[in-house]
Image (cartoon, rainbow, N blue to C red):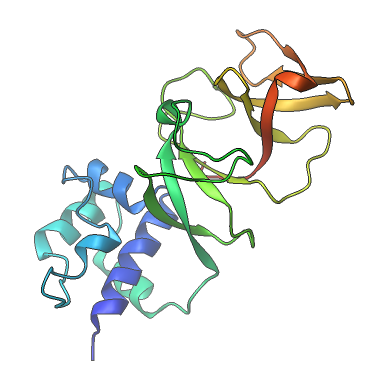
Length: 208
């Protein structure tokens, strides 16, 4: 018997195969961005809500996926997926989305099922614009893990005490300074005083 959970899991796997979130899949399919959100899968009365045939068809067309492949996604064995908070990178620099440790906080976060990173404080950011090309493109999702150790050469998210958010590559870190290489050659590298860094966290996965 086909279950509600199987169908929604297949929709999540369809989005994962495309390297995007369920919300991004809905937008790509020309639907309301919240169509496939977990909050929409149960009615206010507590009944299970199924995706419509039209929404499934549009999602398959948007990802160039056959119905046979979708059926396979229904039957696939579960993969390690972690539900993490999701926020647009353009929003992330605004106040109220992170605590002093760089952990997600406050309201306004969405939710995405992405590859597990074994960090309860992990979160995802959706890239907008082309300022991080060629490393990241508009619409890419990056997963950030505050609990993962950082080494030279890692790509990181840095927030300054002045509220600036940036994605860079760690060149060198000392007790006094943080040297960062820009991902886009058009932009200059940055050197920050240690006292100007609110927090730094490693990027551990990206949808590309």
